[in-house]
Amino acid sequence: MQQQPIYQSARPSFMSRLDGAPVTKWLLILNIAVYFLGMANANLGEWLALKGHFSVATFFQHGQLWRILSFQFLHASPSHLLFNMFAIYMFGAFVEHWWQSKKFLFFYLIAGCGGALLYSLLFQLGQFGDTPFMYRGTIYEAAYIPLVGASAGIYGILLGVAVIAPDQRIMLIFPPIPMKMRTFALGILAISLFIVLTDGRNSGGEAGHLGGAILGFIMMKNPHWLAFIDRTGGGPRRPAGGTKSRWRRPGIRDAKVVREKKIKPRTIIDLHHDDELDGILDKISEQGFQSLTAEERKKLDQASQKK
Image 1 (tube, rainbow, N blue to C red):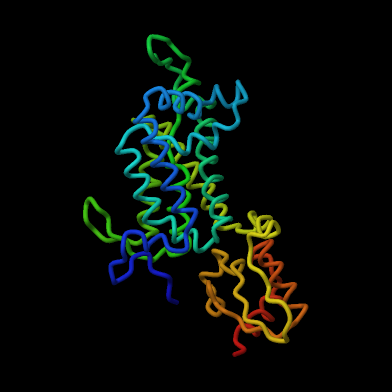
Image 2 (image 1 turned 90 degrees about the vertical axis):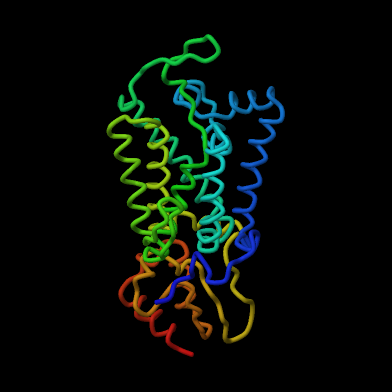
């Protein structure tokens, strides 16, 4: 089974990696723009940080619900921004092509929300302690400790790549060694989990990483969760008319289908107009491949072998 490579043998131009991935491109633009606008204007930067960061107190106690999204576009330092944008640039388009753009946007933001929620849960359970902190001469409760960064959504993306192409080999920057995407994903999750369990440095941020990864993994295994987006016009359209159609249904790209011997991701199926097959394809799009009965799988398998 061949998988779409993350790295091509021929070196692509810088922007060509983002071809057909408008959401990935705009995530890069927005994150970079927000950071440098804040750097260029100190007052604006302080306002963005105060109004945009996530904390347990501001979200749950004060009901400032926008923060569960806005914190994903703020960064604490140039290196924080650089590493996150590099990860989005390298892996975002790959997952966006799998989901399609509208679904990918929801996937990314929901994974980011998952990071904030797991951080909040572990904070309430006392995992990070309750030491107050000082900001500009004022002492704040630990519940006001700010959480910022795109990392939770990015960890969702990394788990997405690991599910789609677990055996894809990537090259680490430091140390410069190749490894499978599955191994890389398990490695970074193990590091985050260790830091959280030992309450190490930036344990709250690592909890956010774990939350994004967990929710990203769950969504990859249950793509029907985002099926409602198809019904708003974001999904594939069936060609009108004719007795024979050539239709590629992204809903077939269920994570479990990657392991099927006969029906693979991005398989193009020639279908004679058949209401029963249409119903099966609709069911896959809305509920995932795993929802099919044995009889439905057999019929779809037979249809996929017709040339």
